[in-house]
Structures are given as structure tokens and as C-alpha cells.
Length: 194
Image (cartoon, rainbow, N blue to C red; front, side, top):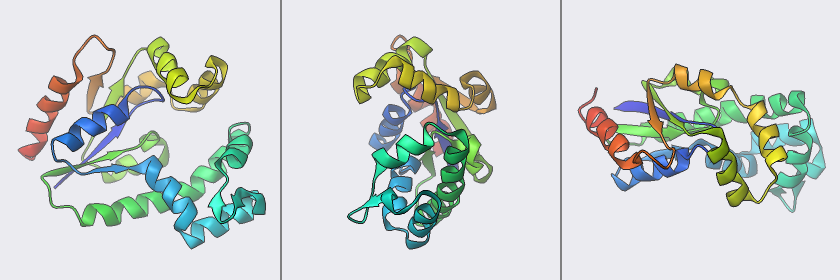
């Protein structure tokens, strides 16, 4: 079974591409969703977050995402600390999930695929690329946050051009080129085990 990574910067549309693969019957592991789940349910990870960021990290047993975001998105070192706690737990969880799959290939969707080192456990990586103004417009519409806040997040991620150069395949999601034919081409390739 091939293990395929799917990555792209904020607003690139990687979740949309992942949903197309899911529609084709391909199992998709959503690393960000898994990380959120693990932060609430993995006892060791929860304890490490409380130790590093304080009791206020959780309210009524649930992760206080707003509190934590207020800390990590304003301090690069704190963000790196949080990632150093969550990435190993998520990579372990993905490994367990992959063992349970039986399809010709699986997709692991993650924004920080290269940054976390998760790409080392994969056969190929697909990048989803979109022009910066379009990415900003999408995130503003989706999250209701300012362009300045989006740029702050983008500037904390790996440079998009460098990220795409590290990918084996790139899907262009610029609202001009059709995404589905690009996904279908890769689907046929991976279904043949190539």
C-alpha cells in the first residue's frame, strides 16, 4: 500500500483535494483533526501541554484552543514547543491508522508535513498550490480573520515555493485549472501502485 502525503499552505485548498480523494473511496488521515483529538484525549499529551502551558490550557477537560492560540501564535518558541509535543503523538497515531487500512493507497493530509518530519514515512507527497491573494481571500471568508492575521500565520509556515519544490506532485488549485482531472490522474497512478 502506498502512503501519500498531501500538503499545502493555509488556504491552498488541500482539504478540498483530500475530499476528492475520499469521494474516490481513498482513506484520508487528517493530521490537524487528529492532533486536536489527541490534545483532548491522549493523557500523556494532555499532561505535557498542561506542564508546558499551564492548567488554563484546558477548561472543563477540553483544550482551550483560543487560550493556547493566543500564546503560540505570538511566540515562535512556544509554537515550536507545542509542535514538538503534538507532532510525535500525531505521527504515531497516523502509523496505527495506516496499519488498519487495506486500500491500494492512503492519503495523509497535513499542513506541516515537512516541518514535522512526517514526510519521511511516506512514499510520495502531493502539494496543493494556489496564488497568495486567492489563499488570503479563502481564509478571510472561511475564518473571518484579518489579512494581517493570515499573513502572520503564512509567515510562520515553510515558504510555499520551497514546499512545492519538495513535493513529488503539485495540484494547482487556482480556480482556473480544474482540480478533479488532476486528482484523477494521480488516483490512476497510485491505484496501479506507482
